[in-house]
Image (tube, rainbow, N blue to C red):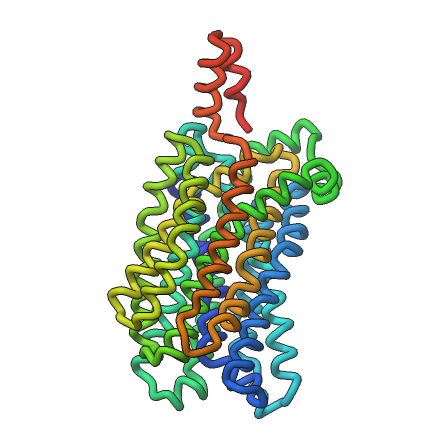
Length: 438
């Protein structure tokens, strides 16, 4: 399990590195380089627009790779998604700016961002099922949290590299060529990830589906027709996690550097400290999910996000690094309380024959609802001299929607469900039937 989980974590970290390095570049340099005719605000909005395209592509990628995962196995998804995302990211670092090729520059940027989203849309489902379908029932949450540690690791890699380049290069050097280096490094990371995943075994549950002839013929059609309500609920439930994460890591970076005058290095350091703490507590929260259930943690996390958005904006507005870090930590701890357990939660909601498609599409639908628009909407709402309370209202509203969706979802932890069923029925038979694996 440790070897499988490590391969899953490494690949997810690499893919999210690719995705996050674009978001940071969009907040810092892509606007002036690819949309020079726009005002500074409009250029940032346009850069965030290309950032959002990656989220729109993710559900499509999860449908394509989910079909592969449910029909041909989880392993091909792990390799194909990593290769696609890595190639697209390297290509972003090679795109000439608007000054060199005109309007073709932002068009190429848009296309490559779309391909990035396609690859990442397939990554999560394959990585999570690799661990969830190998893991013992009582530790499924813990092992399935390893892919969830990947995003914080990827973020730290991406922003650590940009922070180092920003600190060591002049502004002219960073704007000219320095911002491209993290994109080129993605190629080396992708090769390392492919090497790590080369010997990954297919999961026992997919092998069983193959042997019994129970593989779904059209997984996406089956999910949409038979589980559309579950799909919408999971997408709505996860929206707040994406909204909060990208409000902290992308919008806050642009707002603090552009309108509050905080140095790029200081803001990146504050965000990275908060993300590092988020990664460290992820397995601890996952263990709590194994013991107490997935749903209680998700409800607690959504409630915390609802209550913390106004303090987040107030602390960010101070422009004090310590207070900003406190605001970021509170927001990300609320978010990760939910996301630490979704690696086990979402797969348990779906039958194994459609699990790769259902879990991945639901997860990435949340990205569209919460991540694609948040930097754009927050940037527009924060335009002005006063505190951006509109951003807090927007984020709190998304958190309330997610809280309602989580309230409508069932508990899936087999251990918790089995105990409850046994207590209600008072018989060993009732407990055994209720505790059947999801």
